[in-house]
Length: 181
Image (cartoon, rainbow, N blue to C red; front, top):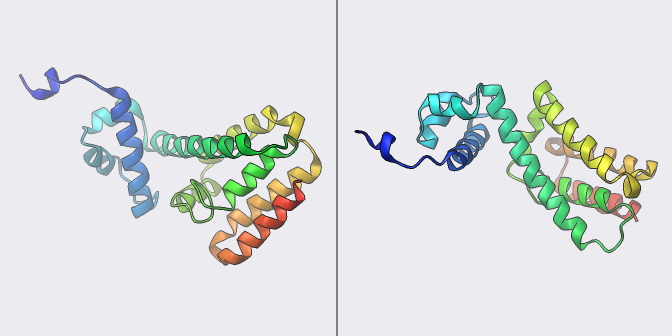
């Protein structure tokens, strides 16, 4: 009997390894260079094992992106927990996270991967669903049009990060944060 039949199955650890390996390979090779075979090999599972968790490359990429959004969400929640002023706290955390260091921030290692959502309809849907849910949850404190403008300006600055200098982005971040008070 082989080891595969006697070892304890740990589906969450396998899923986590697949997400981590896919993210790392996507960073190194880009999404177009990402292959399911390479992800399976890097994670130490069969291609069939990968398909058990993710039925397609699109599902895997969406899983990686959703995982990154979960990390971004946790970063936002941590900043909000430290903010003594409820009005605009989500927007301030969103601007600070998106235009500062961190998961999807300007100098975050995932920024290049997450910018792929511009060209990919599935990733845009994941982003839109996440943002809609967050805005609905924080409607009582962050529905002011001026706060929406600050979030939209942060999105624009984030998308232009490849064309802007870090100093310009950090200055803009500071100005947007001041507008959110």
